[in-house]
Image (cartoon, rainbow, N blue to C red):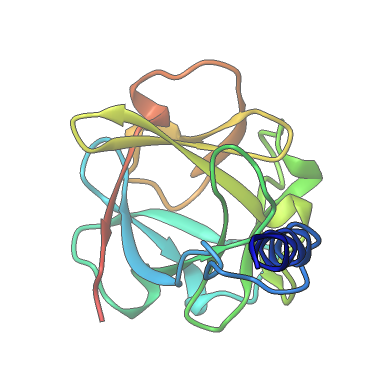
Length: 173
């Protein structure tokens, strides 16, 4: 009888190791709605709610409204830090053009699929601040710390200063 129990255990272990039966739920994070604040406390705005390639983002909002709400979506990329897509009100994703490293034509908000250039990692800096890392490994910068409607975001920072610090207010409806 011990032999049959041992064989049953080994067969079960083999099936589980081959992934034929899963005993764990997937660890993918559910989408969450957030407001994103620049270092000076202004809100990031997806102009028109998203769907644009020009005049894409502003950093001058003093109140969070519909265009300031973003949805963080786990890309399920399997990276050590979770890679998120940042979805706008229109359902489009923010894109770091060329994956980052730019000071002109920096961001678009018209992507309908979450691909590499739409992936961002949030690096915790303490005191509620995060740096937003692009696919290329550069950081997003709110030019002047925020408060602008032109030349608002760059994606070429290689180190984190105050202008690369953002706060996320999440769990909003």
